Length: 100
Image (cartoon, rainbow, N blue to C red; front, side, top):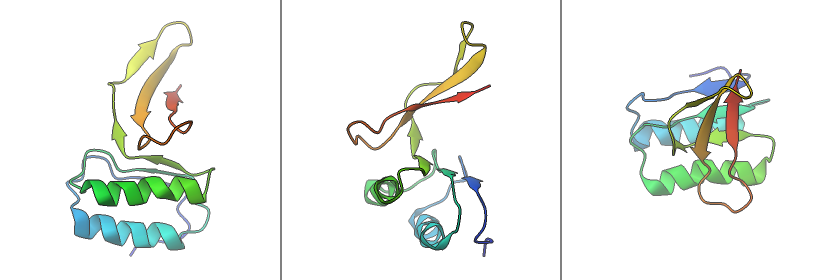
């Protein structure tokens, strides 16, 4: 079991299925101080992905990345890498992340 005080969790491309995703979702619901969870490129059914997206509706400060919709792009203007993400289709929620 994972400690309940992780602030950022990245499980990208880990080949997690629905059983692992369900266990992770249970952990997220009991975690304290979680700021970001990245779970793209796993084998979750759409219904489970939507449950992760719904976490954002409960906590607007939580960043949940379910899938990347465009590859990483370097922006010479800002000197950073921009990653556009799929935020589950919720209007006004989609955003991009900038890695400096």
